[in-house]
Image (cartoon, rainbow, N blue to C red; front, top):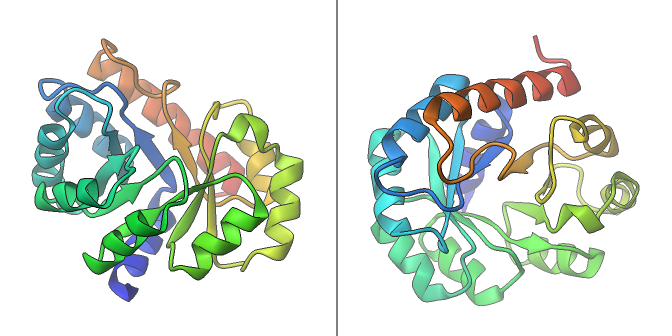
Length: 214
């Protein structure tokens, strides 16, 4: 578990932005992955409701072994095993499920479950979650995040997901989050790798501005 936590901590320190590539095709994966890597992204997630997600995950993992690559929308322990077999090291869920977390920990994979309440947040953290996905962020405002941040361990990374764009990152950062999951504002099916690259650079710039990183 310590190795997985260190892996995530290093990735978040370098660039705490998770690219959520929902709908990514196997054909798009190489160009999109390269665009993200060149922009500085360290974490890439292919949700399992994408076409042939395990093939895309395997391709990204092989092409970017220094990055943290994995799957999103993971709902069962069997899916965790399949993702591990594809060479991935990251499990992200829309919810908090003990069986998914336990399976990820058993394979020394980074696990970020989704939570929306303090009760879920504490349960997931106490069970060994490496970070928490605040989902859907549209219903978890920066004011709510600030209240949760006040009672959760200060070292536990909170990453809002859902509706995150260039315009609302600063408010969440000031409330105490230390990363973001970025979906359709970064990538959507059919978007060119050049468009993804530009969006990725814009998000990295926005994060650096929020965090005062030069």
